[in-house]
Image (cartoon, rainbow, N blue to C red; front, side, top):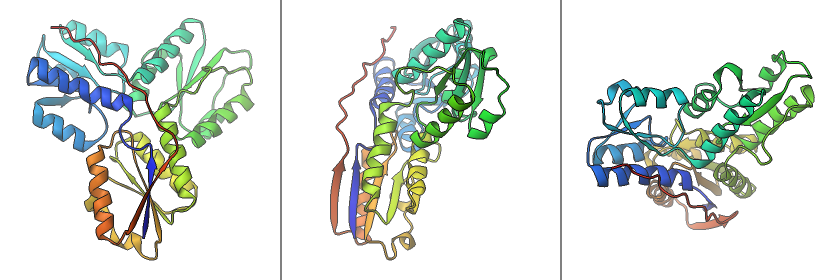
Length: 306
């Protein structure tokens, strides 16, 4: 069997910044360090940081008054900051800069009198945070069917944004439906979907041309990892999401000549390498890395208040 490795794959700049933020805070202030929500959606990352002294919580009530709290890469609603202020918490913000950009746009256009149409998964923490910027004038759209249920007029001021980790194909379908129904709808000059999500999906499409099977390494909670699996399925190739080498089912490999492999933006490279090693044990004899593009984006760490 032949193994094609998509590049880029795995960690993006926003994920690296978020993880390094927790590591640096632990180095500076010691344990325990409270983190609101999983810093990124990957159990391997979360477990390693827990071993270093991070405590992951969902409710700020679990954080002692006056303690430090890190906000995850997915962002938070303004109400969370208000609650943190009430509890005199010292905030460390690891929100990805590309998520912050979407938050800023939602707030800015809501203030201009627009209704915000937010394309994304209603229960995803990133969408909850973005919608919280202007909850009274934000409508969440998950599918094309949701577009048909909207009751705005063609005179209403509408502005759409998207969750940063969605499928390019899904967003295109929903955006086209929005424009068809509401030609006046506006959006940002460049896509809300982040560069890393786009690059990983495009890289996967390149290797899928030859692949008989696609393996996406990522956590079940990871939105961008799930979207990668869906991209493979949409292209007609059997596609599976795995989070470790132990989850590879040998029966998937029967009659397979070429495997395509990628990893979500929150997947550590050591997990990828362990999966590659397992595939070699299962009979892979040739490995080739296919580069779609090189990523050189770096985000600076936030400032730490002593």
